[in-house]
Length: 210
Ligand code: SAH
Image (cartoon, rainbow, N blue to C red):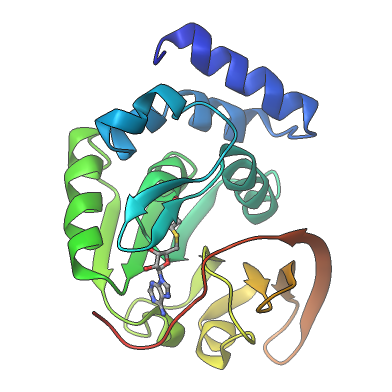
């Protein structure tokens, strides 16, 4: 169930679904998804579905992790990346293979602990986790050349736009009932280019910590 063959099948499915970036595919192929879910669910870990991780939250579907990573990377290695919504840390682990430094923020403390354990097990040493409200980003570490939000926002938070480096890329699901994935590129100090992509389904981006 968790064998290399099962993972290879997942990769060929991702290719069929249109994922082309081989660096992203190899990062996903080298990240064991089953360790991020409870043992009872590990049999389903390589299916293309989101799964519960407790606290009313989910681990993202492999396709969406691949799609967002591909959009963020845009065919180039990344230096400093910020993720909002660590959850169990699966997307974080994939990003750690695509960027030099990864910062990830989660508002639910027990999930931060859980993710920390998983990322330690996988020896993702270039990742730092923070228990905080991601709506305000991480100003002390900014600017970031890529920011990924893995929960649906009602609007694009201004702090995240401010913390994007010039030529940086922000990928964020926006909306409540009907959510759409957006790519925002910072074209210059004052100019941003916004591209509306496909419909998506994420848990909501909430405020505060718990
Ligand atoms: N990246 C995860 C997806 C986790 S689901 C993966 O790879 O599977 C989204 C996560 O966003 C949840 O854990 C939720 O608690 C968190 N979240 C929601 N609002 C947040 C906020 N304002 N700041 C930080 N994390 C938030």
